[in-house]
Length: 79
Image (cartoon, rainbow, N blue to C red):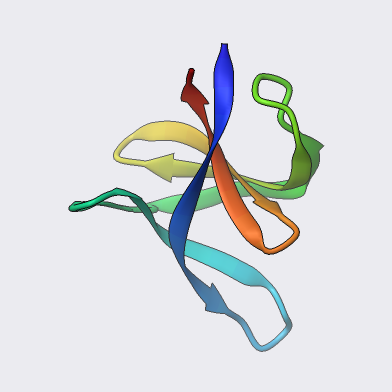
């Protein structure tokens, strides 16, 4: 079962109010740059529960989803 793992993020706030994630700080010493953002939409995390704005991103050649839930970021992690 997946769980919500709250993570630190590096983001850029654009002039139009758009939030663009740039990197995920997974754990001490583990910073992953986001190569591209493929999709942004309101969505639920069906595996870990919760909902927010889902960012579908490419990170090191893998598609990963990040959620902005109110003012906190989370990913689906193995429980």
